[in-house]
Image 1 (cartoon, rainbow, N blue to C red):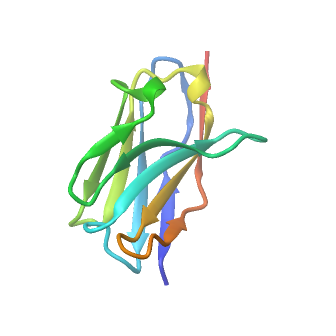
Image 2: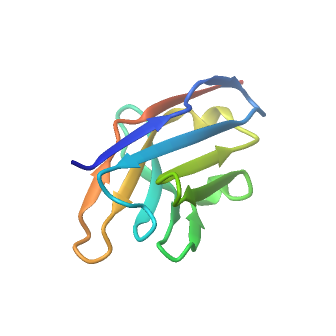
Image 3: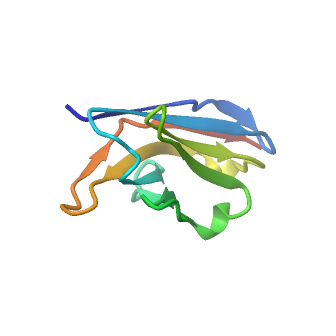
Length: 117
C-alpha cells in the first residue's frame, strides 16, 4: 500500500521559514516525479514545486527564490524548504508522487501552513 504522509506545517510569522517533509512508503521516490501542491479553501489545488526523477526542479513563479524542493532517496522522502514566508503562502500543502509510465498519482492528506503578517 502506497502512503504519503506530510508533516512540518505550522503557524509562523511572515519572513520565517518552514521545512515540510513528505514521507513515502510502499514505493520508492527515486524514480518518480514528486510534487508539492497547495490549496486554499474553495480554490483549486495548484502546483508549487516539483522534482523529476532526474532531479530537474520546477517552481511556481510566486515561490521562485524562496522555496526549494529536494528528495532524499535513502530516506525515501521529499522536502519543501520554505523561506521568507508571506501571508499569501498560507494554505494546506500536499505531497504528490507520480509514476513515470502509467501517470498514476498518489496524494498525502496534507499539512497546514499559516503565515501571520
